[in-house]
Length: 164
Image (tube, rainbow, N blue to C red; front, side, top):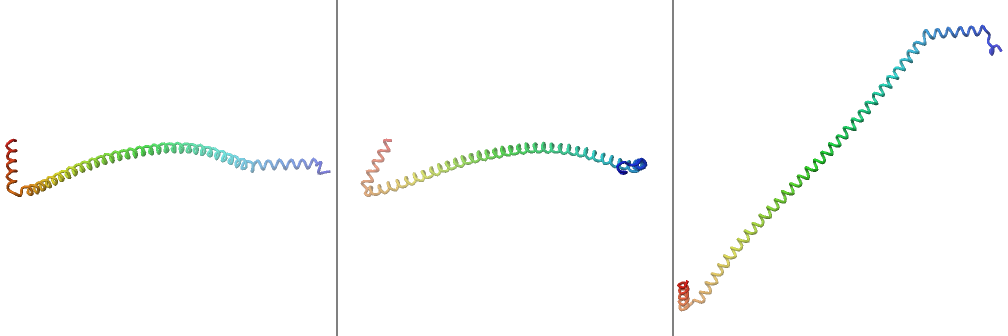
């Protein structure tokens, strides 16, 4: 039963050893341990503050990136719209120019056709006139083979001339 109810002497020596141990720990161990814990606590706090600063910077960068992307999209849309308008304008001008060129070519073709038609008509008239003269000459030669018919024709023509 000695272990269950310790002796006063045992309690004294245990208490004395405990106090000596506390003094030794306080003199040699507590300061380095507390300093290490304090340093560790400061490092952790500093790391947390640094992490908060980094997180804030990241959020700011993310917001800036989104703003830049939005501006880039707006600029891209503007450029696309401008390019479409420019291309439509170019196509419109090209169509107008092609239409004018087609009208000019059609007008030139009509003029050329008219000129060729006029030339063909003049040629036909010349040929008809030449054929008419040839036919008339052949008819007159056939009709006026003898001298009597020639004299009658000349007298008739002279009378027509005098009347006019």
